[in-house]
Amino acid sequence: MKVMVTGGSGFIGSHVVDKLLARGIEVRIYDLIYPEFIDGMPQNMRKLVDYYQGSLLEEDRMRAATAHMDAIYHLAAVANVNDVAKDPQNAQRINVQGTFNVLEAARNNPRIKRVLYASTVWIYQDTPQGTGILSEDAPISLPAHFYTATKIYGEAACTSYSKLFNVPTTILRFGVPYGTRARGEIVSAIFVKKALNGEPITIAGDGSQYRKFVYVEDLAEGCALALKDIGRDKIYNLEGEEKVSVRQIAETVNEIIGGVNIVYTEGRKGDFTGKDISNQLAKNELGWVPSTSFKKGMEKYIAWYRKNIHDKNEGSISL
Ligand SMILES: NC(=O)c1ccc[n+]([C@@H]2O[C@H](COP(=O)([O-])OP(=O)(O)OC[C@H]3O[C@@H](n4cnc5c(N)ncnc54)[C@H](O)[C@@H]3O)[C@@H](O)[C@H]2O)c1
Image (cartoon, rainbow, N blue to C red; front, side, top):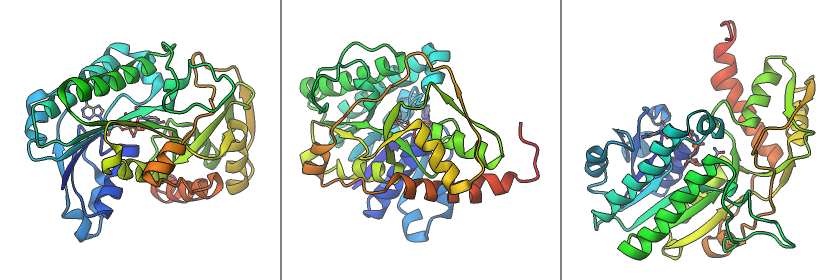
């Protein structure tokens, strides 16, 4: 079986690649950026993966890259909500047109048996919590953030391609991930960087806003499991288990590193304030178990960050 992962050089995509390779699946990474993490792999895994340089917007390259593939994981996107707010036109191109191009490549290639789409629990941001926990069939309200708008487009395009053109799709609504290879701008990464540099940690709002964080390797395992037949034309919330407030993140970083000064500032507009979201369907149907505790995950992340980023930059001037 051959599977293409768009965005396979990125934070989450790289872990999805690892999980697929661990199952003996051949993987093609389709990304603008070279996936450096594949260089350090053991030879038996390295020989199963190749890199195809290309943009979501290059339709011919996309078609050529997907020619001998059996499935596509579509993770490439403008994933940072601040980048979307800064340049919505670019986000529209990459997240909307780019997703359309992936689905078109799949529609024109009968070999492709599944497109798995990286969506987000931000989808629920504008859904009233009501009395219960939100599951995949909760109605989705029109969104306040354009990032969410692009992701709702992606979900709508997947379901309609599935029904209208018989392109089987799976929508994966990712919880908020953290862990090794994280992009520098996500909250846990920012906190760790500041703590290791001896700077104060800044929290937008009072720090009571919580997330159910999901450790990135657990999230990637959920993605790999979703390739099972039962995942065809389904939506899964790959949401973490443990509620962690922003204040607790800072405190956990302090517990592991020590000596951290925590400062509170005004909240961000349109930020995801946290909803109670169920991951029961993924557990029941896929056998997914997001088992890494927040403390354990942060220990792994901080060890990785020290070795791969902090220690390498020691002695250099930080800009
Ligand atoms: N990180 C999160 O908090 C989070 C949460 C929920 C959902 N998601 C979704 O998960 C997916 C992966 O997110 P991530 O955090 O790994 O992002 P990331 O930015 O680390 O990775 C995205 C990858 O896509 C590639 N890419 C961007 N534009 C491209 C283009 N035009 N053509 C080809 N490749 C392109 C980038 O080079 C990068 O390697 C995204 O779809 C994102 O919206 C992320």
